[in-house]
Image (tube, rainbow, N blue to C red; front, side, top):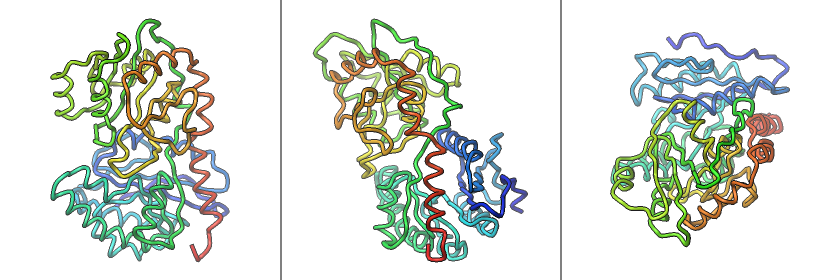
Length: 382
């Protein structure tokens, strides 16, 4: 019923690792990240790494498969993820399984998939409260805390996209559990440096999100732009992706003395790249604290840097220096700071930004970090 699954060739001499993701729909960021992983893993030495993802809709991605119709639906999909993990567990030394929130089947299946490692991209309890800021969020987070304890207790190890997240999961659910970081990364061959079409007379900025969430902190950027700057400069801020109705209405209802916001929505790759070519820098997230996080490992930051686009951010990134020539971290966004950084970025060569960043954000490096951890701890006591 689960259908055939194609995996990369496995040598008995190699460590065998599977990264498994099951979701209703993989968003564009998840697809990109899994694609970078799938391609980067081909260069691994001493490890046969397979990437498998399931979603409801068909996709042409070589690592992606369609969930059978009978297993579609919130709880049936969770069951399906465990059936796949149980079926494939005998073929691998470790299964890195992306954590599924408020999953009752973890009580039954967690003890049965003995070589599973749990992979986390957030502090899920805090995130669920943020998504639904009412009794539904409280109930969802409370339920998540119960089921996540079963999942963590029977996992071989806990992985987080940052060590902060991994340490949180261990402290909350399983204090003795080994932890490791599995950060986001890019495949540089898939991201060319941007052509330089920056204006000499005006500052253009990009704010990118697939679907807006409160932790992106766009509202803090908007609030900063309501204040008049010391100069008469006008920023053009390109909003790329889906915004909430509330934010779109706020933008149209207010006058911003030194900023013009252009809402582009979703677009194809050609138009997306064309807009970025005119930009002086990109804005990262400014409200990670709403997820009780202090550091990030976001894909959009890594892609902007690979494009050669400097970054203005409200949080530290695990792979980047706190402040550098092309990365500016600020606790609170400021219109004057945004203008000043814009003029500074015009003096920085795009290739320089890319060259300095690539060694720090490479996906193969993050995979190798995981493989090294698993190899060092590849004993029955893990």
